[in-house]
Structures are given as C-alpha cells and as structure tokens.
Length: 195
Ligand SMILES: O=C(O)c1ccccc1N[C@@H]1O[C@H](COP(=O)(O)O)[C@@H](O)[C@H]1O
Image 1 (cartoon, rainbow, N blue to C red):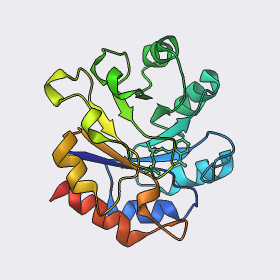
Image 2 (tube, rainbow, N blue to C red):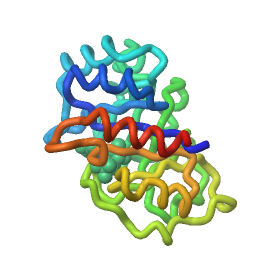
Image 3 (spheres, rainbow, N blue to C red):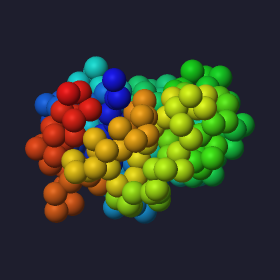
Image 4 (tube, rainbow, N blue to C red):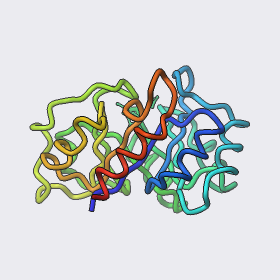
C-alpha cells in the first residue's frame, strides 16, 4: 500500500489536524524564505503536540548538516528531506549517524542506487505544480523506494498512484484551503491512499 507524507505544516495547531488524520509521516520546512518556513520555537511546539507515532521530517535546501544532526539527536525531527543539490557525501554522513534521508533527485536518477532511504521526485519545491509522470522510470527499474511529489491533490492523487506506483506520496499545497492546512482535504488524501 502507498504511504503518505503531509508536509509544509507551519502552524502549531496543524499538529492537531495531523493527529486526527494520522498520516504515515509529517514534514516541516526549515529552508529559509519559504511561505511555510517554521522557526525553531514553532518546530519544537509542533513536535511536542504531534503524536509520537507520527515521524516528523525536516525539509532543508542546501543547509548545514550539523544543524540537521543536532535537530535529529535532540528528537525534534525523525528524519531529513534534502530538497536542494545536496551531495551523496552529505547523504552518507547523515546515514552513518542513522538519520533517515529523503533525497530529491531528477526523474532519470530514480533508477540510481543511493545511500538515501527514499528518493523524491518533485517539480519545484512546494510549488503545487505537477510534472509529466510518464518520465518516471517503471517500478521494476527503481532501486530505492520512490516518493512522488509535486502538485498532488484530492483530484489527481489516485491517478498518480495508478500511473507511477510510488511507495510514498508527499503533499504540501494540496491539503490547503486559502493557504492553511485543511482537515477535510487532509482526510480525503489519507483516505485515497488507504482505500
Ligand atoms: O512545502 C513547501 O513549502 C516546501 C518548501 C521548500 C522545499 C520543499 C517544500 N515542500 C516539498 O515540496 C514538494 C511538493 O510540494 P507541493 O505538494 O507541490 O506543494 C513536497 O516534496 C514537499 O515536501
């Protein structure tokens, strides 16, 4: 069964919505200057309020690995999502310290072996835009569990799963209404992957 990550949670009360719908993973944005970027205090409050059963991943774009290791060691995050041009060396460094890693790759790299736990395909970060799913290599050719992202919504999620057969889907914009996380959208998305 495909698993679901709900990302870009930025208000403390978003933790309550996540607890209600129980996604397999949640995400917060540490990359600076994004609409959904959280500061450390908000991140701590979200982790505190979120059920222990929901792993919280931090999204970073070309940022300091030491910060990631500190956040992980302190239990603030349970894994990292590298959403920039991070090197395989950085991935290895994190993996050597047992940090689970989601690494953004280009579609053609979805077939390469990597030290990361998951490879993630996205259009642009948190843009809410889809890309042409036909360029994704078929499942038998893929070496690492695939996380599909980019403009997934309640309208196209089922098609995306049917076409790409990803192990995971990752959604940020598609569970929002007027710029805020929305319980009904979140519930519908989770129901689609679990039906
Ligand atoms: O969600 C964000 O705002 C974000 C900011 C910077 C880097 C990554 C971000 N989110 C990730 O972007 C993709 C696609 O999101 P969307 O559903 O198209 O909005 C997803 O992997 C999020 O984790």
